[in-house]
Length: 530
Ligand code: TNX
Image (cartoon, protein in one colour):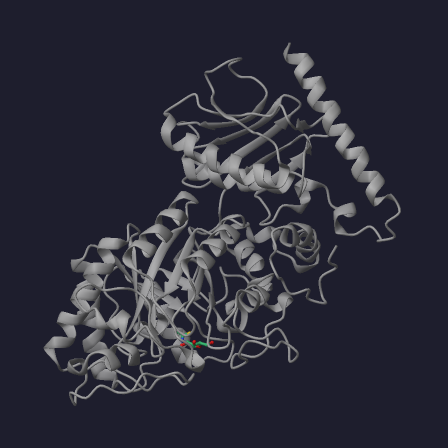
């Protein structure tokens, strides 16, 4: 019975494969990277180890089921259901999700299992094994099953049924923090667009979404105790558009959507600078008691909270308290960059108090690396955004913080900033950190990037997308893709597998997938796209 079903499935797959070949037969396209690399070699980010067994693979087709368990079910079942959703879309297959114990027990299909003894796989690692009877994903924790599921997606044809080649993958991340940031303050974007980004991030194993919620040009999150922030301070953006903001329910919905993909949300309220939208909303936040106009330009460094005024600290306590209550993740980002209108001593005094407020609400501080020149609180994480040209003393302050135990997130602007133009022909974007072509954004080593910041002090990497010049989904995707994939690989893959000549081929094989997903990526000339 089972054999018959398997044969039938294999025949269907074969038929699909033959008709595919026929369709491509008279296509004059030269063979590209995918002709050179086996599916296991195409995986992006590159896994710790992956090899084709040389043996037969698994025919993924109409008979395939996703089996979760045996073992404590609920969460694994949810991972199985999401994977089924992700695979159903492009394949059109039914892919029922069944309990591992049901029916034929350890039968054909895609099996998701937790192994309590597989400690070496950590919080996000997984093993994947493909034989003719199926694909087995094993992990120590549900997040590992989800990450492994994203690997499986890449082993399958972009569309339709097909064969998962026989082989084995064992994989764990190099860095715990692999992030992407989006600035919804300079231009407002709806939650749906950010959810789409979460899906795009998660498929390359990025695990953190940092949302820059407030800036001079707009306040984008509802705060019950200070309602004018969103209602008035949110109703503007760069260029004079209407702006907008997220309700608390919309934010919660995004957090839950991301959590299901094992992506943590880190909200940022930038302070003490980058606050014109707040100052415009409440006169009492200004030292002179006068609210400025709302701002729709792209200058930075002109606004500051009133450091000497107690009301300022009631304000940040209310705002950070409400945000902490909405955010299950451990981090709150308090900005701290470019506070050019706040004298250094005031800046340090302000950051002391802001960090204490974050701690009071049970969260860990993340701040841009200017915090290193003040007094980072125990455990505070500093996010480096300098360039090769950043003064040695500024880098040294980050190294000093790292030496005293502050984890460092690396977002070097001349490599990881997704809003930098690729070259002079790029229409959107800025160029203050120089042009950042795809090769440059990939070609650096987070473990050795900053002098005297050892790999052990590096929490991970993050690719920020600032949106002064980015107002549409098309421009967003043009800037993020494909550079984001390179940052994802730098965060996940072992340093030994990071090399541009091999990476550019792996990247090239992603193009049919990006295209099928409707992602408007930049076809960088240094990549031999399919
Ligand atoms: C610097 S990076 C900023 C942002 C700008 C960005 C534009 C950082 C912490 N501050 O305010 O949007 O450059 O690239």
